Length: 241
Length: 275
Image (cartoon, rainbow over all chains, first blue to last red; front, side, top):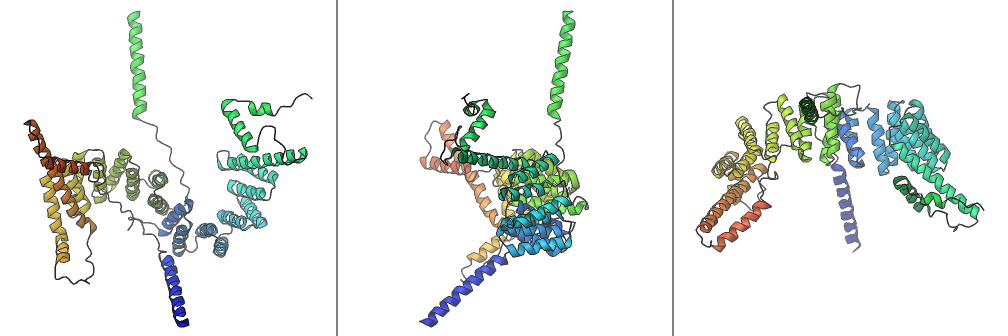
């Protein structure tokens, strides 16, 4: 009976190994395009970038690997594969890739930015801020480094610092839409802080806000801007005594 | 004085109509896209990157992004790069932007006049715009260059059928069934002495499809014949045989839905962008 069980376990193990190898066995490089005259590594980078931009991280990793196998000294492929590993939670592989990218090119901006993202996700905010600061120093016009650092400040509830970074990003690139969305989020954080101050000063955490809940106020402000309705602002005016 | 004013007014009208027409005829070309990847590298390296990006987008049905990638090659990197026109043409077909697709296959043919894929795909685009004459001309040219190119055989047979040229379609398909040897494969499968454990005989699925298309052509001809019978009895004030009207109705339904030949779904594009 015991022997039968051990056979069963062996069979299950073999099945598991078989499935695992089948999963990894599909990791083939994509076929090359007809008429390609240049080095295939840029083709692989293009394919992988497209996958990565659609959050298809596993596929991106496979194709970035094709790129680094073809051009082992091309640092950005490691930096990007590292980010794909980050998305999948492959921490060791991610760190190894970021370090390899920086080893190959210590001025590679995207390596620091992507490693900063990794550190942010890992909760290591000091290292994340360090990487984003280094990236911003390497290229003072890089708004991504500033925006990413702002988000780390926001996580740490340093909203003033976050706002300062985003203001700088917007000044540097007023046509870049992303920092505006991030700044709006920071303003929301300020708003929530003020609502909390209102509750604290009112002496009750259940005190009624003068113009409604924060969500209602946001809706009414939107309506005011779009249709000219002044309801929200009237609700916030105070009587003479 | 009144006459002069009238002439001036007419002149102004003519000029304004002319300006409007000129504006409509020559739309402002869009500015070239921003294509920063490998900016300091030679054109073939950069083209490789954007082909990769575009093909991956195309494979995942991100058609606008794919269009942008291929446009980077065409507008910014290397306007002579034939594969980019083919790839963008296919993207436009999927977007059902047939005039642009036609333009890209024209450009591809400008660079490789004997490209079977470009000719075939342009033929499909003509067919999708109901220009069967030019579609047929393109498929004929492909078959002149390579009579065994089965996509064009399929497409030419469909055009014949759409034009009611059933005999021509049947001749073409039966000829290809012989040439491809697919009938031999069928014979082998049907051989009663064939061992039960014999492995599958591999064949080109496009060759196998010739039989299906042949059946469709015969069905289309059958429908035409049924219609002739129904018309004939109708003209004579007689009631047609109900079994035939039922059969005609069933076929009519098939050719409105599953076997609809004029919606392009039975046409075969050459979508091979990779080796």
